[in-house]
Length: 322
Image (tube, rainbow, N blue to C red):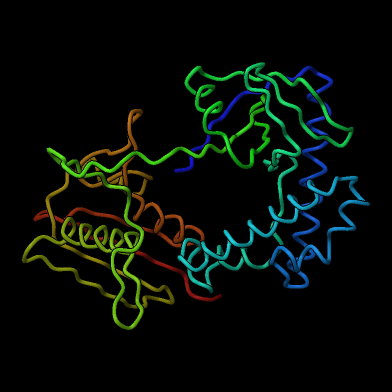
């Protein structure tokens, strides 16, 4: 089992300046390699290395190991993007978010994390120091600190790459630890269920994936219908044109509303029965607020009145073309 242990580096001002310059160079090189990968559609490690390895070493002064990690980081970013696109996490292919993610190369922040292997980053755990490769040579005796249990875990199980990162004015190392799996208990005396989150609930025979996100949207839609349209209720939609003005009138049944609440329904986070946004928690109630904004953008008017027997009458008037 793999776990990540984070330790805080305590570099001197000179060491910190060297680390920052190295991190900037690595991420600038990764952004350039990403542009090559995007332009030439070469997103596999060895294939991209043929196009970028020599240039990265010469242009940014990176060592062989650092250049390879920059290229691998670039390829891993495109692999992650591809997985998110396939899972639908960025919407449908025609959505704005999907097209924005796929329409340009991936860019890396100047202070984005950079992976190191043991040849570039030897650990001296008893002394609580590390030796880090940088653009200006190897910086030795960089101090670090961590909780006692994290130090013990590092000493016993650290194995593999570590990530150098800078966040909120502080330097950190994320070290990978290989923790042995505990022996399985074949005679449990009880069970505890844990919800790890649902990604794909089921897949139909024709390949349609039923995800938790889609079902939750359906539940919200059904809940809204139940709230605004009780059993036996009705919704009436009427359209007409009066003296060149388009009129849309929507009338529904529902619970009676106090007259003083009606003028507030076009404010964000308001519902018919009570205010749902307070200083302590957030709520919903954006429907009429969004309608109001759209109507105003088209120089129209929105009228909301309460029906004496319950429900609302919402009237939208939009001017016709001049």
